[in-house]
Image (cartoon, rainbow, N blue to C red):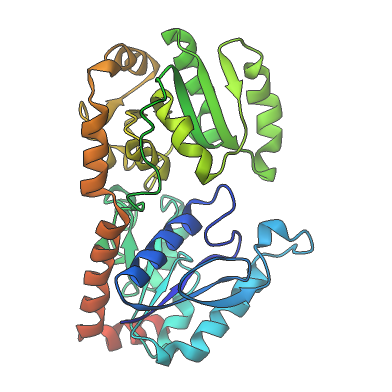
Length: 354
């Protein structure tokens, strides 16, 4: 199958450090190529892929200080894709709703994976205007605010099975927080959980420019503690040791997380997850098997007292069964084939045109 993967331009594919969407696009693209498909990746020019790379911008926008309006390069990207759409069997966008106005002029089946939060009120009129544009959710819970959307399926994220593996020589001794520091991720809550549990906490996280004030005023003062270590942003190669050395990954989110890639990264290393019951958490974590789902800080502290009851081998096995990149790719192939065969495709284009 001739497949176009269209990625955001803010990070390279794969990203050098943090970048959940671009990381998933890379895993999917590489796995589709491995499965024998003819894949073209539209992404920044500093991306690295075994697919055919169509550079839509010289380098990732986050690394280009000359870029002040990130939307402009994406407009160019959409036009670049539209001009060659007829050469593909399916177009797979990872730009949320951005390509919707183009759908009426595309000459190939298309689908958009929605990677972000959908509970914002300003999104309602967008999806009202494009009710038949085919979209994929990354969890069933993500769909809740937008029942009117043209859902083509739910596909959980997946990782290559060999990307992150347990390191048996690492003795689990601390709690881990991994990802990004921002208000909704609640690293402050993770610090409270660690303090009340009596366990040290290591924080490996990115601080975006927009969150620098929050970090300096709300989080940095909490780091002046003997039981908290702020490592900063880590790369893929550093994750197995970081996660394998953790008794548990803390995921005390305060928002409806659409998926939460760090949860399956921990599972890949055999590390249990203690997560707040928000968003996709009940779909990703098998309570009492791959971690514990809790409601608050006290619940998390109680779960940590039971964390050694869980089998790290069983956690890794469930990752391989449910969250490998091959499992993800197979589900997307099913959607691609349905879209190609669907008699609704002309209606989708007409609906998009309004």
